[in-house]
Length: 254
Length: 212
Image (spheres, chains in turn cyan, red):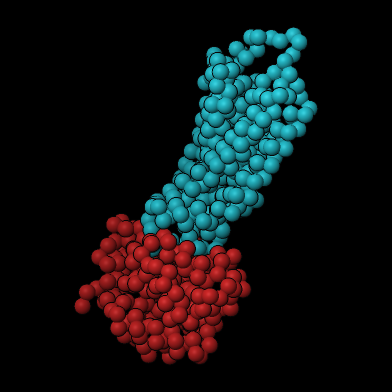
């Protein structure tokens, strides 16, 4: 299994590194922009506001460097060379594993880096004249946020990395069955946009996947809202898989 | 002699067009078997059925005693060089073989280099696959099919697009593989004299198979 993981890692290493660099540049650029344009009462806010671009773009940043591999292996029938050497389940599992790890890294590393750098701008924090001491108490785990800001950011990054893994899985599943590379690479983003629109239209903005990205916006009383977006996405992946299972579409399409 | 491949009453059709009709044959280990037939007669389909890439509409296929589709999805220890398979275009020959060999992790880089030398490819050549000539592609295809000491080797139109020198090289390789008691099934429509090397030749005609 380790050799398969190594093999798959080699395949996507360069694109993932490029995506990591782009994501880091977007995140840091956004952070610096926030630092010089906003007055915020806490370093965490610098970081949190700077997530706006990344929270919208992450489905594209995660899927593009990873999910093309499976498409090309199917397109040129290269995947058929693998079946006589390893079981289909093991091969696809190793591919999926590398896919979700890559997805996690693409979001986790730049966000954590940005979180660490935001502490360099502690001097730019401005306490408002009419400071509202209870402001942070309306957020998710406020005491933890105030007392262990870096750890809070760290767990926030892990959570967002998990969301990236779900989106990465969605892209991977699309790449197993769909025939068009453009559709494969943009479908998770389109899902993300449509889900955002539909949930907002139905008056459930807190349950969007986009809202799940900002865990601090969830108060202690509605923390379960965090799970709605990811669960809907997993459900969508599951329905998609079932559809292709029922329609008997093959991954090894001969 | 041990029967390594057995097909029993195999039928295969695509979109109601019958390609193979009630095919039964058995192949002993260590033999070279030739499959003859016109274009679209079903030679490649038969190879794909044997290696598990296609499932028959009816009938049974056993490879090394295991029923395809029941006991095993794809028979392992089988080398396949099918004409419509391609490799990643942005890699060199050595990189492609290294990538494929990593799946099983059974052979070393020096094994790969010796196989490349055997089929007439230069392992130092940095030409990308997309710039390979047809002959180089065939050499690479043959190399991956035999590099892991596969017991059964299926070669589909491996002689297309190669020059006389390469052809002689391929014949020598086939003889060497036979001497190692490996079972080979091959098809070609360009180098018919290759069938002189075969122990058994089957002809596929209108979906039926006959020993010639």
